[in-house]
Amino acid sequence: MSETFTKGMARNIYFGGSLFFILVFLGLTYHTEKEIPERTNESEMTEAVVRGKLVWEQNNCIGCHTLLGEGAYFAPELGNVFVRRGGEEAFNSFLHAWMKAQPLGVPGRRAMPQFNLTEQEVNDMAEFLKWTSKIDTFSWPPNREG
Image 1 (cartoon, rainbow, N blue to C red):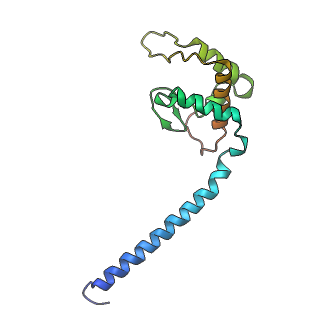
Image 2 (cartoon, helix red, strand yellow):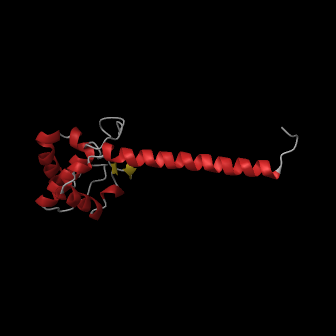
Image 3 (cartoon, rainbow, N blue to C red):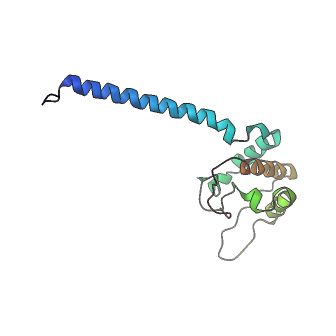
C-alpha cells in the first residue's frame, strides 16, 4: 500500500461504500415489504374497521391518545385497550358506556370531551380498536396498561 492517499483511492472508497450501503438499504426495504403482510392482520380489515379509523381521525383521538406508540402522550395508549377492557366478551359494552359517561368530572383531572358519537360510530370505533389490538407489535406497549 502506498504512503499517500490518492484521489483514485478516495473515489474507490466513496463508490464502494455507496454501493455497499445502497445494497443494504435495498435488502432492508425488501425484508420490510415482505414482513408487513405477515405482521399486520390486513385480511381482517372490514368496512367497519375503515369507518372506525375515519371516526378516529375526524375526532382527532391521536391528539391526546397514542395508538401503537404514535400520537400524544396525554391520554392512555389504545393499542391494547381491547384486551385490557374485556376482549370479545365485554369491550363493546365497555366502550359504549365509557363514551356515554364522558366527561367524567373527576376533580383535578382533565376530562375526555363528549363527542356525541352515534351507536354505529362507537361500534365502528370498537372494531377499529379490536383490529389494531391484533397487529403484531412485538409486545408493544411494554406493559398491560399502556
